[in-house]
Image (cartoon, rainbow, N blue to C red; front, top):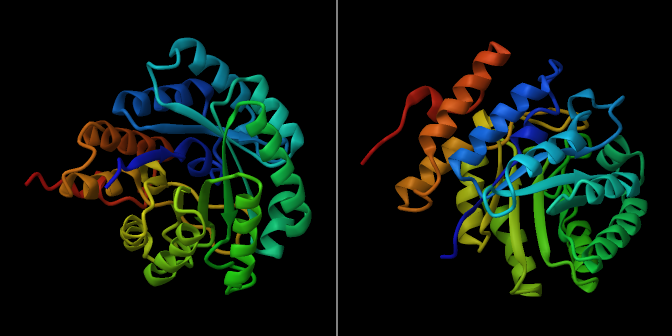
Length: 301
C-alpha cells in the first residue's frame, strides 16, 4: 500500500457553511496547528466572490501570509479551490501549489454552485485545468455530486464516467470523486473508483466524503480497497456544501487518522494535535462538532 495522503480541507469546506466569520488571526492559528500536526496538504480557502461567501474573503491574504512565514519544504502543500477563470487568476497570483477545480455531475447542483450548466462548466473547467497544468501548476480535478444529489437523487454513472473520460483525454490524471450530498455507499465507491483505475491505472485518486447518512468512514475503507491514496477530510468533521439540499460535515480528520493508526499507518501525523484543534474549534463555535475521537479519546493498543 502506498502512503495514505491526508488533504485537510477544514479551512475551506469546513468553514464555508459557518455563518460566524472566523477572524484571520484565529484562522492562522488553526492553520499553524495543522502544519505542526504534519498533514500532507492544507486547503486554505476558495477563490470566490467575497460578497457571496464572506468566510472566504481573506483567502488571498492567507496564502501570502502562510507562504511568507513557512517557506516551501517546511510545511505541507497548500491547495485552493477555484470555480472560474477569475478565481484561477487569483490562485496563480498568490502561488497556490495545488489548484483544485471540478465539475458537478448534477445539473441542479452545478447551477446552484457555479451559475453554469454542467456542460458549460465542463468546457470551461477542462480548459482552465489544461492551461494551468501547461503553465507548470499542480492541478487536481474533481467530479462533484459523483455519488448522488440532494435535489436530483441518483446520478447516472455514465454521466460521472463521461466527465472522467474527458479529464483523461486531456491528460488530467489527478482526480477526486466528491460525495457532495453524502449519498455514497461502499459498493458504489469501489465500483466507481475501480472504473477509473481500469481506464487509467496510473491515475492519482482522491476521495471526498460527507457523513450525511453515517457511511463516511465505511466509504473511506472502501476507497482504500479501491486503490485510493488521498483523502480530503476536515478537523472535527466540520463542513458541508451550501448548495446541496441536506448539508452535513466531512469525514473527521482525527477519526480517519485514528483508523490509520490502528492499521499501523501515518503515525508521523500527530493525532494529539488534531484532537486539540478540534476541541479548540468546538469551543470557538460553542457547539459539539460531528467528529467522534476528539470526544471519546483514542485507543492506544
